[in-house]
Image 1 (tube, rainbow, N blue to C red):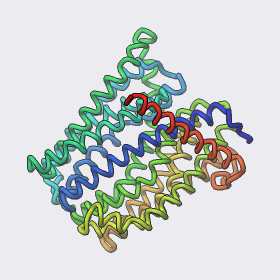
Image 2: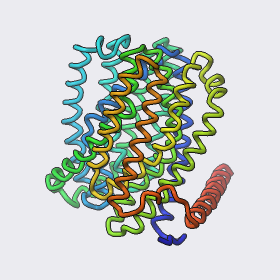
Image 3: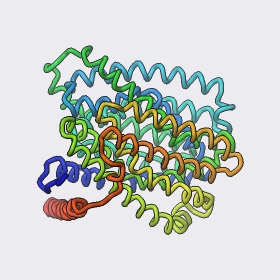
Image 4: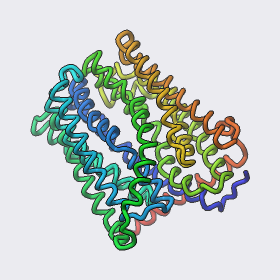
Length: 460
């Protein structure tokens, strides 16, 4: 299919992706700064305990979101729900899910914390549970901007929490001498303030449609049905990415967890481009339900460029990782290097996975992603239980790299069957690719020039 430069969807995706990428690069720098700061202030053991506390929060948010985040993006972008009804549905589901999740998590911690979370104080785990409802609401609210395709605001609210953590963590950890507890309190403040600001920004959009449609119940069933399809997949994807951290803490110790979490945090920075594109792509693909040719072109075009950029990034990171770890994290974190290198091949290949998943979900078949993730998570957990006791965190990294690659390959095969497009389209470059990338380069350059000009004018 020949795509012209003036094609609206291509231009919009390219423009929104560039803006999203620039803001997420800024977020990445802040997040990396927080990672270095916390690693330095807490040390490997404290950093591992902090990571488990935060991981408990994100685990609860994943297990108890019931796919509402994806449902928001899908129903709002496709105009199948008005904003006010969607907002009321979100508040109802959030209230129910928060109460259930908090009760279950607190009960498990009080009964099984010593067995499931060895060497992690119970206070840290309970604080992680306390943060969960706030994090869940923030996830729900943020996804409204994704559905509205207002990526400027979407990316802006993403920056709030990491900025607050970066500012408050040194004060609470070092000056007030609170240690790991201070780090968790900084995270709590970041999530709480971020959620309040997001709600304040979103409310004018919602209030504008207050009298447009009050029939919330007619959307509720559709929300739950669609959300359930994506929910299982979200859980399985999360387990594929994070089960190894729990298993490391269970079989090894918090110090090993601290090393491994640093390796994962650095390696996953390579996904910043695929995440930026994915954020923009899903609502766009949902709108192209009746334009299969354009949908096929977009998915294949973006997937192959994600793979190329990720491979280049992985090679550069492999070359620079040793001096980077020594300079920023210190010699205490040298054990991070080998698992990080093992993660890179899977991270590079897995960059396509999120793009292909969006295409499959936009066809109204998100459950297929769940089936694929189920295969990956079974292999991941089984292999980790076998390899971590023998090979430590390097074994966990090997398993992750293999399962990320397998997940991507299976989704490419399914995408080919659903779309009728040959599987090699996701890796085969053509003349259209280079012209569109060149246009993107010129657009980025012009955008930066405009931003610099506006900045200079504002200063004068």
